[in-house]
Image (cartoon, rainbow, N blue to C red; front, top):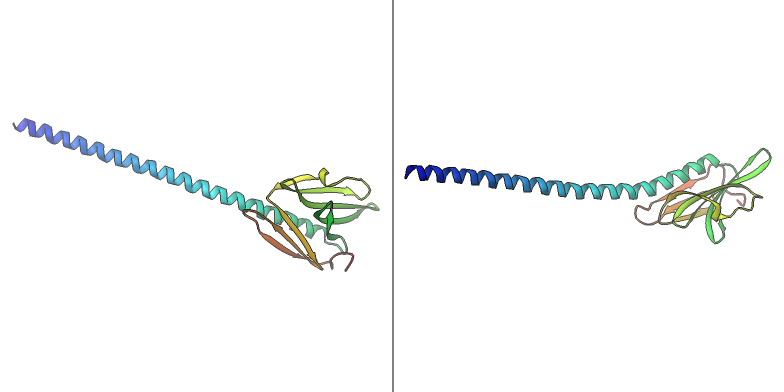
Length: 163
């Protein structure tokens, strides 16, 4: 009879060890699943912030590079607000147009006589929308959608030619 109780004790120990191992495996599985969801959320937020902040930084750098008196204006071209930066190179006037079309911010660098339109611009970055406005020396740039943000730039050169 003593042999049966030893065998029963060993069975209980084995059963308890297996149950403890099962609890450990389940905890590890849930930790991995929760960690995966957290990583997915962080990645989605980073993508949203990347689109908005990168677009704004790109446009801000372009404005800072091209800031010359009368060289920067927000205009309507083909019913689209366009940030137009003009510059003279070797006696000819060139312009860079930054605008939103077909789900992305685009840029077109051309001379004034080329005949190129907004559909010819190169895609810079995808985003949900871009709003551009100018009030004297202040240019407001706003990306819309998730991760959207806005930026107001003050032209050091004095603004557009109509000022």
